[in-house]
Image 1 (cartoon, one colour):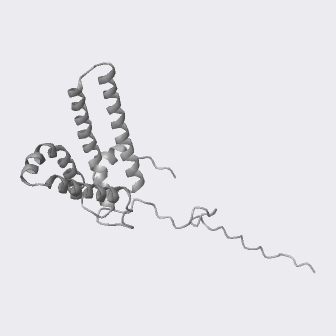
Image 2 (cartoon, rainbow, N blue to C red):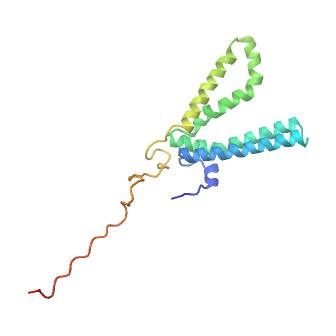
Image 3 (cartoon, rainbow, N blue to C red):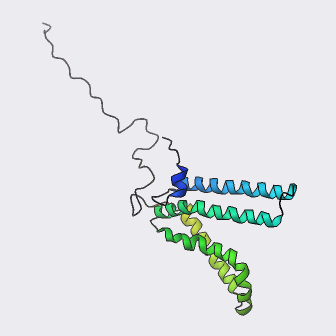
Length: 184
């Protein structure tokens, strides 16, 4: 049975749970489209001088912002599948992004006062990113229902290689008709 993905519900609703396979597909689609936009805008900037590097950076920032908003709902649903609150998005994604965006401005003055704070914070961000990757892309969700809804994976009671259906009605043979005449 092939189920179609409803992209509106997938990208806009934070209710329910999302298993690994649809999460991988959603992530590949969003980041694949973003990559196409990056290369197209870079090619237009480099080849045809349609716009300059500052405008290219504006496009990159706009695409990153759109990626963030498109991936919020699937990540929250994936966290729900792991029986975690959507607030786990903050340490998983917002803190590392904030480090990379604000680290250019905050870390150099702090590095001058406190030696080694940049490397310690970089290791901390790396650990958070590895933890987030393992949690979102590798770990299986909670088996059965949890706080956030039923299990998104269908329960398969029979291995796929069996050729018969256990849910099909059983056809019993018709009862034998009594003989009207005996053969004597």
